[in-house]
Length: 306
Image 1 (cartoon, one colour):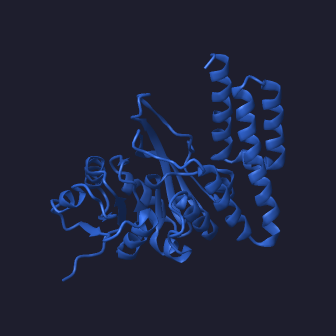
Image 2 (cartoon, rainbow, N blue to C red):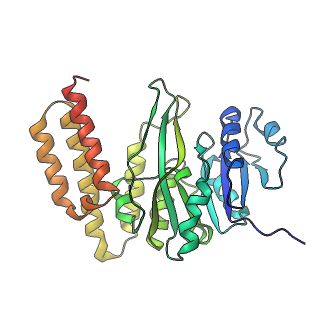
Image 3 (spheres, helix red, strand yellow):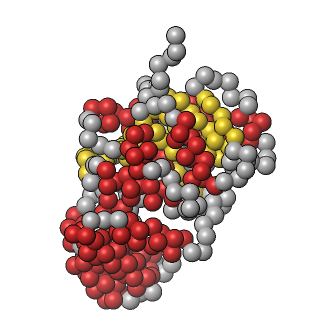
């Protein structure tokens, strides 16, 4: 008799990060209270990653190897195609789940059929010389919310914070193979059009900030391209609001720059114009506290002379 399928599929794509990967895998294996499977997709690593994966002796773990390096979107789509569970998480190979993360995230999706995903809070863990960590801005009360315009403004949740319904991700088309960066943001924007999201205040993962992370110089340009495509896909009646949301987001960035240089009058007036462009969004439990934290941090650092 075949074993019952797991409730959650965790997909990790990895390349040449054997030491960090081992810790990430251990954090998945420590999950209790929910039946899970782990699919590790090795994106043609050239170190001893594949040898390490062969040592994982568990019926709940499947290791897949890409014969050619194809970047994260291709590797994640392969994991998605192989997933047997109702829910899927795409976990980066340098991050860690906290105990009971999968149990906590799956709970709202089991209780209600409406949410297309569940999002918990994250702990930013600074391994880049700064030391310490902090809870990233997130809701303090459990709630359900449509998050498309929050995402369009710039709010995001990293992969290990999110648990999606497998059928929803497949319906959205999975990851775009043309994107090697911002591919998770692009997927989120498409998934968020399909239904509300359950937001949980509990911390579910540790996001490791470390020197091995690399971002292209044109990252902001890639993000803007993703945002523009999402706006073009909106019904005509919503496109103007989408454009105003992006205008507001750019104004907030300008206000941050003004505060950093000590031009407080310009900073406050620009922040006010950001609010005027999309006032309703600043009441969002995701965007409002996040923007306030960003601006306050810039003012504080400037006043301290940093």
